[in-house]
Structure formats: C-alpha cells, structure tokens
Amino acid sequence: MKTAVVGSGIGGLISALLVAKDGHDVTVYEKESTIGGRLAFVQEGDYKIDKGPTIVLLPEMLLSILSEAGITTSEIEFVRCDPLYHVHFADGQSYRKYTDMDKQYEEIKEQFPGDEEGFLRFMKDMDDRFTLGKPQFLESSFLKVKDYLNRKTIGSLFKLKAYRNVMGNLKYYFNHEKLRTAYGLQTLYIGGNPYTTPAIYSLVSFSEHKHGIYYIKGGYASLLHHVKQACDRNGVTVKTSSRVSEIETTGDRATHLVIGEHREQVDAVIINGDFPAASRLVKKKAPKPYKPSSGCVLLYMGVAGRFENKEMHQFYLNDNFSRNMEDIFKNKRIPKDPSFYVFNPSKVDSTLAPEGKSVLYVLIPVPVSEKLDWKEASEFLSNHVLDTMEERGFNRLKERITWMKIRTPEEAEQEGLYSGGSFGIAPSLNQSGPFRPQVQPFAEKNIFAVGASIHPGGGVPIVMQGAKLVAEAFKEHCNTESERKDVSLHEQDLGSVRPM
Image (cartoon, rainbow, N blue to C red; front, side):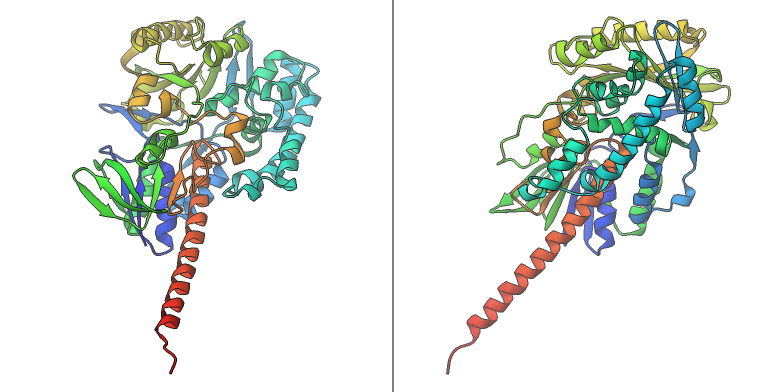
C-alpha cells in the first residue's frame, strides 16, 4: 500500500517506521529543509540547544516504542536527573524534587511540615490511577461512540477524578499552597492551566517521581539521527522541502496529494502536524474550532562559562502563581512578573558549546492572542527574566551572553502551530481522551493523524504512543480493505457464472 506521511515530526516518523515494518511503501513529505518538527536544534556556530522539548519523561515507554520501530536504542545515552529539578519561590524558598521517596519525604517534612503523609497518599493514589488509566486512555483509541460511551470508560473517568481540576485535586493531599503549586505546574508542559485542567493530568507530576526525568546526551533532538538511520535501513523515503498543499478526496477516500505543481496518487495518508491547522489540507472539510494551548516566549542563548551551581531543570515562580495563570489563560495579557523555566544542559553535556562556554534555554508561558505586540512583549519579558535570573544566582548573566535568539508565538504560528500555541490543543476536559481528535479523524478512513493535538496527547513519548495507535488502526484498515476486495472479487466470480 502506497502510504504518504505529511510532516516529519517524531509522530510522523515513528508512524512511518511502524507502517513500513508491515511491508508498506512509505514516503514522508516535509515542507522544511530538515526533519523533526518541534524536535529540533537551535544552532549558532558551534553552539546548539534543543528548540522544543527538553524534559525526557516515561523513558521506558520511549525506549520500547523506539525499539519496536526498528531504532537501535543501545546507541542512545540517557542521563538520569537527580534531583529531578528545583522549584524556586519568589520569597527565596526552594523545593527539590527527587526520585528517591525517602529523600522526598524528608524534603517535604523539612520544607512543608505536615504534608509528608499527604505526599505518600498522593503517590499511592496516582499509582493506582496510572495503572487504571494507561491501558484505557494511553494505549487505546476511541474511534467509535461505543468505545467511550460505555459503563467501563465512564466509570474510569470518575475513578480518575476527571471532574476535578489539578489544583483542586491537590487540596486533598497538600495543605501548603506552595507545595500544591509545585505539583500542579506540570500541566504547563502541555500548555494547560492547572486551575482548570482535569485532575487526570496530575499523573504527570506523579510520573516524574515514579519513572524519573532524563536527559539524552547530545540533546533530545539527537534522537532524529537514530530515527533517520532507521528510515534509511527500512526503506522509508523522506522528502524534505516538499510542501503538501492539499489532500484530494473522492467519495470516502483520499486519492492524491498535491505537492507543488504535481499530484501523486496514494492509497493512504498519515497527517503529522498540529491537527487544527494541518487538517485544512482536506479542503472540503470545514475546520473545527479548537481551544489552543498556551504559548511561550523562548530565549536561547550561548554564554561564557558554565553555571555548575545550577541544576539542569529549574522553575522560578512569581509571588502569585494563580494570578500569573489568570493573566495567561483568562485575561490573555502578558504577566508583569512572569514565572519561567530554565534549562541548563551544559551542566552534564560539554558537546553543546565550545570549550569553556555553555548554552541556556528559558521558557516563559504566555497567552495566545492576535492582539499582542510580540516585539514589545518579548523585549519586556527577556529583559525582566534576565534581570531576575541574575538576582537568583546566574551571576553576571547579561554580560556573559555571547548570542541570544528569541522565539514568540508569532513565529510558532508561522511554522504551523495552531494559533501560536506551543503544545497542541489545550488539555481541557472536552479536548481530552475520547473528546480529543482521534487517529482516524475523518470520514475518509484511509486518512490517519498523529501529533500533540491528537489522542492521546502531547509530549514526545505520548505522541510516539499515538504513532502506535496509528499503526494499529492502519493494520485494521488494511484488513478491512482486503476483506472488501475479497468480497468484491467473489461477487464478480459469481456474476460471471451463467446458468446452462
């Protein structure tokens, strides 16, 4: 079966490998000159740093899917983060998050006395919910109404406390507001407001303890080298600088891709892009309105020297986190005193910068809005954040910067991210699980989709799990097509038999 994958993000590439493994002829079309989508590097001379994802979660799932797709995982070097990260509060207090439960218990006992038993209850409850939710909501698709409108699925949503929001759910475990914030901010990884995002996403902060946080030597985007090698070995053709402008359909099937000035016939298509934007390739379908995730202003920089005293991952929170979230998600305005995340990979990886130098990455959550002047906003935010970093221990940072690049939601939207949101569609209740676009999102059953806006959701391992769901649905589609052809041939044979 001649299969086209439109877009070479990690979801598209893993889908391509899994489908090719079953003997199909697969070609990946990428509009840019390089593959990877959000999984890419920002480079300046001998400096490089991840452009998008930086925190490696669910390592066992990630390695398992890579291996299943035919990628040699023994060549990928994982570095375990311990502590996982530091959370710095505006008053100077810092909370360290560990994998080791005994260390964490003592840290909470010291920093937030009285909440240490609540932490143990949180971990036990989340462990139970992860065991329940993983097969039903990560490893299964909801392609038909009966797949989710049933007693088992609805019962699971209640057991997972999907009717609560993350911060509301944390009140059942932690009395200290700061500690609730430290276990609620992880919804920002997927562009969600912890005060409105369903409590099922509390599993992210649980997973950090249970499964650990890792760094991939050479940067997260170094995975692409291994993926591309697997594509070459397994006959997956990758065509860069090949923008697909339309997926033509006839009846209930996709039939051709329009690429530049020519058309190519296809038997199946896998769309890998931010789905609300990429779905417009199917011209005769009216685009649905979706709620975008939050955006971010990103600072990438090279600096003289290293900050050895700073952990790889750090969060700096302002003095009123709830107001910060309200500004971003409700008021759609730039926070006057923003919270932000700092990535300091040179602490463990000397390959990212010239000798004696290092790289830093800063992510500042911001709203998505067409009304904002991003030039003015990014100038204010970068100055404010760099000043704050200097105050919080990044000594003489501004004078040590050798280069800096800034990325705003405006650039993100130009690159194809819906409304400039950085994490796919928002993880709201009506855009999660069965209510999120599924891997076969159209009436044309030979069109599939994968990516952060498609079930099961965002984050590299989860998008890769989505690629597995695509491969499973693809196989089922092929079986159905084969049965349909057999029936058609049988009917033709019967029609050719004439009575004597």
